[in-house]
Length: 123
Image (cartoon, rainbow, N blue to C red; front, side, top):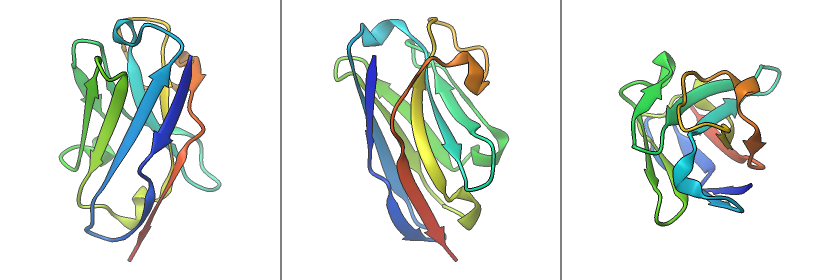
């Protein structure tokens, strides 16, 4: 499985960005996918997971601001990020578990990762 993220960039606080992640190399509609992020000097943390049926679960620090969606026909995962804050600055990654069910946002449970896309939010 391979993933390519896009859509990162630099915005001011309060702005919006939409990230995309396109998958290849496997049957996309059969597995849980998720977004993670990693800020400099910090551990990778979960943002949201979404199962093949579209059920989502968000981390508390992005609830109400970020919205994830997936288009199984287009083999794509999206992350709409609104009301961005400087603390959202990080490299954002999409990832896949080897299961239909998502269960949690533990990075160690996700086997395949994209290369990441940088999001920078200035105050």
